[in-house]
Amino acid sequence: MTQSGNRQESDEELVAQTKKGGLTAFENLVGRHQKKMLNIAFRMCGNYEDACEIVQDAFLAAYKGIGRFEERSGFSTWLYTITLNQTRNHMKKASTLSARREHSLNEPLLSEDGFIQADMVSNKPSALEVLEKRDLREIIQQCVSGLDDEFREVLVLRDIQGFAYAEIAAMLRIAEGTVKSRLFRARDSVKNCLKKLLDRI
Amino acid sequence: MECDKAKKGFSGFLENTLPQEAREKIITHLSSCNGCRYELKELEKTLSLLNTLDEVEPPAWLTRKVMAKIRKETAPEKGLWERFFGRASFSPPAAALATVAVAVIAFVAFKGIWPGAGRIMMPPSSATPAHAPSQEPKHDESKTLRNNKDAHSPKNASVPLAANKAREDVHLRSEEAGTIQPPLPAKSTSSEKIIAPTENMAASTANQLSGGALPKAKAMIQAQDQATVPPSVLAPQEMAAQAGPGLSSKPGALQDKSFKRKPARNVPAATNEEAMKEMGDLRRQVTGRYENGRPKAVVTYSIISGQEKKLMVERFDEYGLRHGLQEAYDHNGKVALAVEYRHGKVISVRELTAEGTYRNGPVSENWPWLKLH
Image 1 (cartoon, chains in turn purple, red):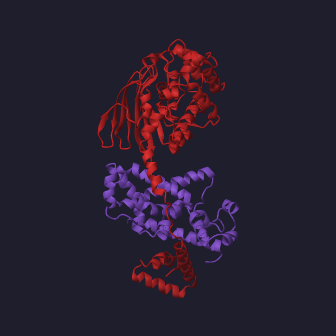
Image 2 (cartoon, chains in turn red, brown):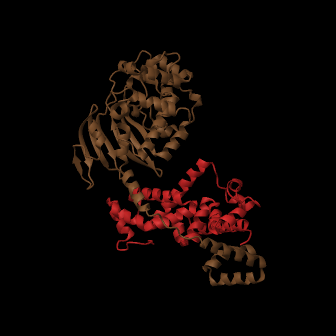
Image 3 (cartoon, rainbow over the protein chains, first blue to last red):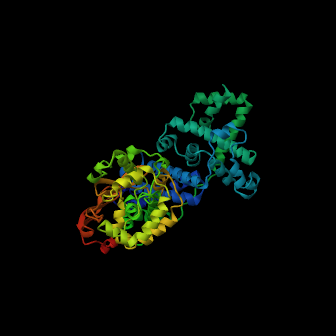
């Protein structure tokens, strides 16, 4: 589960040390998990700087709440849950600030051309410009970013980060069946979005 | 097999998680259904496109920054204490919190919850900073009521119910909005003294605050209270400002600034509280006994991820000076610093060490601002 680095001490041992006030132990944990957390946050919000901030806030929240961590789930799972929560908060704040609301996934699925929000089209370069100027990956990220939180989460965790269904279910505290059904719709939406932006797949 | 059913199996089909039987069914269906073959191809392509999103590397400074943030934030009590009754130079987060405090001071003041001072200063008929109760947003009384049972001193017992109720209303509001109110001048020990040095400031403020509105209920209380000691609802921040040299040494400057800067934004109490939660997750609450309408003890909570944590307890004497044990808590809910005051003067200090034991004063380098007392 751990990503890299120092293997001599397990997450659990380091957590125990942190609980006793060991900052170095926690620093170890930060080094271990920051990359995965950053990637989750980055794919969720689509912005590297924001993702860095989210990771910092997530670690801070984790440190403050480490007393509440019980070893029922893995430490990394717990950290990722916090990361996702922080991401949600962050994006809520950001969207309140810019008064920009993400579209519900229901709407684009129902309507013919509702998938790309109107203001997105006006604010950002057209699909053609995007194609010309930007990397394909940015288009993909744009489609991912267009999803509603709950659908983006499962898609990012499964199709980009490659977590197992069970772990995703634990992170999001929802049933595995729910993960699957959300993923089904998320993929469908992304597929439609890509089709639209790329004209073909 | 129908197309809809087949499509539901596509994910499992591509991920190789389907039981053999279901897999074969899909294969059979695909061989006879162009539409589904196309759909499956599209899904496959989508997944492979998503797969092209590479991992990004964290910046080299990330760990360092995380740890710096943790070090800074895990001593929030210090920041708080500084903020409420210290004079330390503010670090950015503390400054942000302080801004919230100032904003709330301004907000509450603008809403006109300053009955004591207003009453002394202004002619009774027009000047009491006032609320129009009808304009107030509804608030959840049950949430705020719990600590207000003793909110009125015996002196007020004779005030008729309606007036009493109105005053309680004001009090509740003040608490909801974060309970921060304009400080009275420093270390005043009688109401006469209060008037003199700040009359201009307070009067102009009161003028600004009242905005001409004078609800009947308030007028009633006022008339009834004219002869008595100003009762009511001074807030803890007032005490803090009084007791703290940093704030109290130049109350006029601080207040004037804050009043000018913030009051234009006349936000309803609920929104304001929400903003506080978001910005600093800070809430102050007045608990315990009241004497002459002044709180004896103030408890400050932080709300982090919806969890309420006690941050500090402050106690005051009848003049609003720190008196008794003042406690700051760390994030584990342990007392990190306990300072005993006697009428505004530090008597003793007990501090939690890194080893988890307590050491008795003198004040360590960790609390430089305390030496000023």
